[in-house]
Length: 471
Image (cartoon, rainbow, N blue to C red; front, side):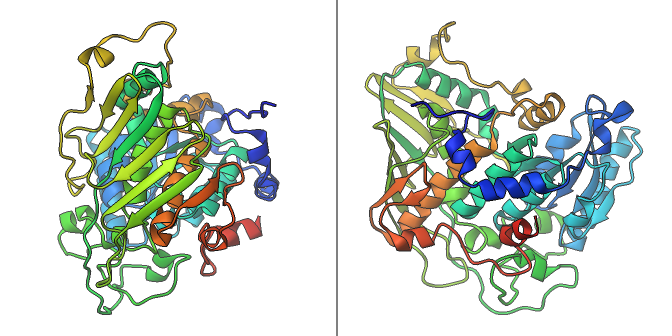
């Protein structure tokens, strides 16, 4: 029997299995932002709170939102007061040059800003371990949400985020900007339209991060709220290789690749860092966006010295119910290669970089195939057509979703499924044995140790457990 579907394409069975979360979300009082009414309706200006003012905030999200004529960044938040002041100045200067007078409010705690009725939406550009909690709190406060990938640190967190955001009917977008890039959408349309026959293999190439990092304890800078930065993770001594640069140089303080990206308490490594991007496209092309693998077999090397402990070289094989195998390996070219019975299609970003400190991408050819005619022949009327982001602009796609209340290019459930495939791959890498996965129940079959890794202990008063308990 075909499962009922909700508006985001998720089976009703999956949506209701976390009914406690849904009930908690629905029980929260509805806060209607001021700008959804009257002269300040979303057809006019959308007021946004920017949470996180570091590398991705400055390089990706603030620029992407500032250029939207119907958007105003009216508040910024960061746990580093120096970064916070930089962000306020940056946004105000941008608007001043365009004769737009805005006084940007600053916050050291985003939860205070969420109480403002005049803020319609939030953009979250924080470290990975600070993604799930503010998304849930923003949704419960009635705000629309843009969040950087990965969606979560654990499968349990991701499930909660998807359930709450959908229960609150918030306009949602995740920083999987490849979905808005024309070559990725076209590649997936061609694969799903049968250009290369039946898909049997998808090969994904991802980079790695170096080991290292100083381990000595340092004084906590006066400008940093370190306890809140740690959030729900264990309380450990401060070191700037653990957090981000405290260089007096503004450029280094904001743009250097931060150490937290290489520490498993705050990031699972490239398997979620780049994996959330590429696995998302693999799912889009395979039409497996609302499910996941049925088995995982993985191996990896992990550092045994230094502060940075995310994985090094690795190899992962994930099998899907449709008969396809997704292989992820650091030796493959960075990108996604769909292999079918009649040929292959390879797609990647080419020479594009999101930030200056991104790892090298290698090949600059962004869209190739085993035969040129596979991708040069235009799609026909009967071929699969996927969501098109206006002008290939990922932030614009989210703004349009806020205004129209129609889904953006990536739904919360799709974001969760691509991230959870990476997370269970990480579990496979840690355990080094083949694991059977039930994508509907979101549990490993007959493996208590693996299932114990689907969530993490949370240090009070932080974490989604505390938020949902209050709800």
